[in-house]
Amino acid sequence: MSQPETTPLPGDSPKPSDQDEVTVIPLAIEDWLTVMVMALLALITFANVLVRYFTSQSFAWTEEFSVFLMIVLALVAGSASVARNRQIRIEYFADNGPAARQRALARFGAIMVFLLFALIAVLSTRMVYDDIKYGETSPGIGVPQWWYTIWLPVMSVAIAGRALGLFIRRGRRA
Image (cartoon, rainbow, N blue to C red):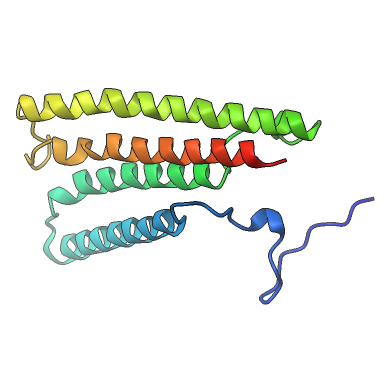
């Protein structure tokens, strides 16, 4: 019979599997970006609620900007999950069996994530180019659309880089 897992108490040392791996680019970048985006979202939403409550009006730009920030938040979280090897997988196959098979599956998953986000980066760069070329503006407040779309290729390159780093780290493990 296995021991039930307990919630760690303050001062308990974390399990080795809970600790972040050592990476060339610090994982704190994604952590701080998450904090900043969440704080900005909270401030924008709170300001809009106050203005709407006291004036029966609304800031027109808040919904469009909040959607943009939520997309950035999802991409930053994706980068953090890839870097920490916490992306979605079927654990029955990924975490069972011989160590060589686990390593091979981890490397296969990492290289597939790399290829996917490298492709997204290339294709979304074309989208940004078209937004600039044709002078597309956002539907809500009329700012240049590329102000929003430029972040998809940037974050896709970041996620692809994190996946490549994970692929390399998994190859080094014995």
